[in-house]
Image (cartoon, rainbow, N blue to C red):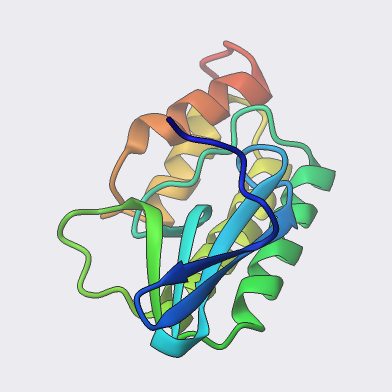
Amino acid sequence: MPAPLAGATIPVGGSTATVIPVGTTDTGHSSVVHVPGLSLVVSGDVVYNQTHMWLAGSTPGSRASWARALDAVAALEADTLIAGHRYPLAADDDARRQIAESRRYLADFDAALECSSAPAELIDRMTAAYPDLANPYTLWVAAYDLLGTSST
């Protein structure tokens, strides 16, 4: 039966994994698992790998918190990152690429949201910028959540 973790470390083979809280991302109280001996981060919902990020219910503050969480993951300087949301055909699990792409997606989403007055406009802008990302329904859900049900 699972039990709460006592402390923040878990032995993994000959290495130690550390659970690191990073704040709000696509949900509150997000954490990552860092295994320095393997130069590995398991990011859960913090970093996405070539997948539209879940931004429904987000606010400028929560998106800024997510950007800070990405900075915290980048500071771990891992080589490999296992994302909780990964396009099955993603080229690799390179940590630096995934973090940079997630940062750029958040910034592009903010910019597109600011100049969109209807869900379709936001969807069109983000789809033009990211035509090949997996799970486009997450973009649609965010667009309709944040901009209402208008189709203009």
